[in-house]
Length: 99
Length: 275
Image (tube, rainbow over all chains, first blue to last red; front, side):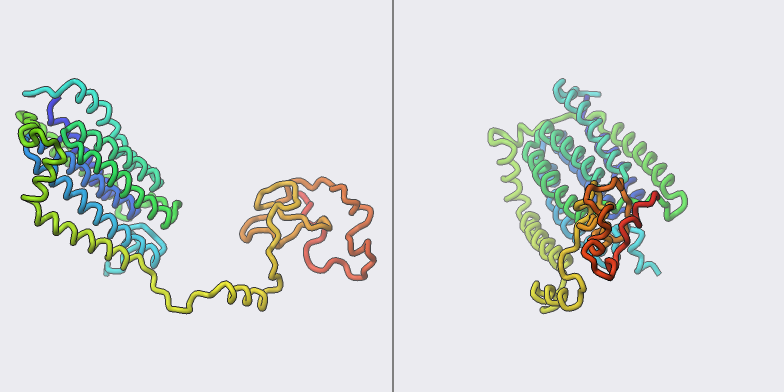
């Protein structure tokens, strides 16, 4: 077993997250799929940090986590305020900017 | 395949890798959003163990504490606020979008996976021992974070405070002062306008069942319409004759000799017919 396995696993997880973003309609689940993509990228960063023998990859993963936390807070607040006005958390219902 | 990792790590990978994959697939496939969140927790915990195995114990702890502990709980809170029953609709808004997305995903996974597998065949695990030395993982991260990445770290604090303020602004509901009625005003309004200021009888009280669809039975044996929740079809579970003596005496009004029959409300036998 080599480090390649981790990288391939991260690629598959990233793909599942991307497909989830495309397929799911619930805005919260779409958000969770984005989180999954960020997590798989973190796994890649940690794996490469180990491969190259530098600590910078781990620091990048740490920053990704911080940004993800901030992004989740703001995103969930946006979803909640949309839900309050439109009574729906579906991404199809927020279409006022469409035309 | 240049280098083999240790046997224990192989076992960990082959146990937790499928669990992480199953969590990701379950998150995308389950229709209930709460099930999705729990599947994602599964995946994140597996990834946290992967970090620990790959010489990143600090990130593993942060993954479990921040991601599964804080972020997913935040997700669950918002799910509960938005409503648990907000399941996904299975209707496709764009025709063929789902199939196209799956084909795209398979193609992407095949291309990226094959590319990574080919490109990293010669990848050797150098390990972090040379960088960390005696001080260990956390001290090494701290040393790099507070020297090389100090500016990014400071900018992160600005990002976090902005996110906190932004979330408060977005989630705040502006209420005009005085728009909310006090308890005194509510009570006064109820006594002034309502015919029945007292509490309505609960469903199933004094009846033989505790379902919300079973009306309460008033002391004279008649089912009370006021006890039923609105929007529920009333049902009569069983209309066994109660040993109240009502059969002999009739309604209490009749027994007491008043002239008027009981005003309002259905008669005693009205709901006892078979539905």
